[in-house]
Length: 248
Image (tube, rainbow, N blue to C red):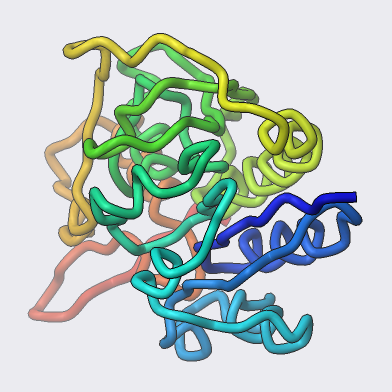
């Protein structure tokens, strides 16, 4: 049996789970892994890292240019911090796939979508979040959508609650779709310009101070959206000190 040559890019516990599942497929040869080399110092390190999983599975950890030297059928990305070069985007025969963008596209592009989905749910009357699988292009989360799954946002969800729920949905989606995306590249319509409702940058949660002039609902939603240990939670300032807030 000819194996499908897969390049893998990823991080976090979800990336580690997907890498292990991928490597256990009899028809797959994972030729290398690109990951965040500082993973062992990140907040998720005690739940599992791609760095450690790749070492455990004896899969080479490489830099992105190494993939260009190899014949690759498909590149799979799971929560990778890397911006893929134009040359690598066009290199794999079956394309490059962002397997698990932890948001419903095209509604949320960019970063920190889980916290923002909680903050926006009440005003938008849209109590749904999701995960999307897309072909990658040169834009940020703008490629053709392969599939997506959604779940409810509950009024007592914290950021961590919703993240863990989405993480499980995402892993199941990866396992379900893997046989299909390893077979052929589908011709899918691109996302249209202007379809996205929200785009947030990596630093979009930098200001975690509660404004006491906000409504009670807005404060409540802001506090629970930012409740995601070990990250700094929402706070109020008093006497030059921060007073941290939580809902439970």
